[in-house]
Length: 442
Image (cartoon, rainbow, N blue to C red):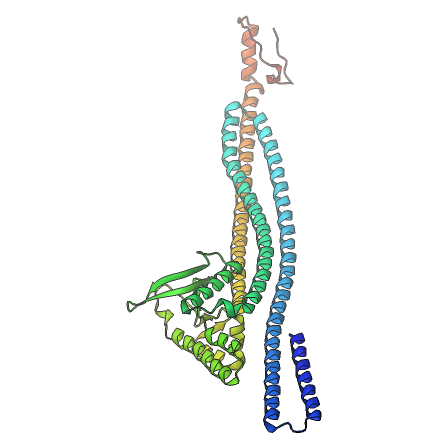
């Protein structure tokens, strides 16, 4: 653009020098030629100013997009660091769970082995069933807990990868937006239907790049019936946490803007500026008359987003009438361009991610508490088993003492029968005899 301005300036200088030279050789230059020269210079100056203004507008747009890209790169770095910290914590937590499971398994095996050695087969079978009833749910809870931790880790990796993809997509979208701005004149010379389809296409691209889930976090072209029997077809409904929604209505005001860019006549430019502003204002007035709050099932905020799919047209509107934005705001309408809408939807997508992460954290905390309570219950059951074993051992020892100790104990009397000549084929184990008494062996 600077080269064009320079060439125009050189052309003006050349023309002016040629005219001066001609004036030196011909002093009879009439007033008509002088006037034509002045008009030519004025026309060229006007074109230079228009070219400068157009260059400044395009440069402002590119600067704005560059700043947005830098902000996204900065946000990505912060998210990377946060994800790395979370990944490290999840790994530590998983290692602790693995160690705890190994420790529990080893202790449970030792306890089970000891119990089996101290009791009869029937008692061992009963306790094995009891241990299985206790251990199996606990092992299942530990397995479920590990699976949840693993799933959360995998999900975080996927989200981090998705974020990089979103940044790449955003960069491609910004490039596409620049190309759309440059080719806007040739691409949108059709009728209103063609312009509307183009606006919906731009809106679809932004929704796809936002990170929102179609059908879950936003819906397109839903038809709603209001309380008085009328109906409304909504372009896009963005869902928010706590069952709230934001409505987006796409409006294309581009014809007058294209006409403005194609003319060099100042009077015609003024006419097209007024026509463009009137078109935008008409869209605002029409949208403000749609009372979406009367539609059952919608819990919308106090405002509606009016989407202008052309970034240059949006900037052109505010440059020529910055009060129009406040006019729309007073009617509970917020005018957004592709860049501002994308930033808004990215924020909503981030809120949804935080919402899901919060729910996962709450579920992990609940499962951890349940696991702890189950383990305490298991320890209580082990204590009951220990008391039962102690009581059984005491009863067993008392019974043995009654058999082999004291005057006239039963084992001694039975053994005496054998010494009197009873025919036997087996011998009582010596461990059942009292060490302080003599016994007769066959």
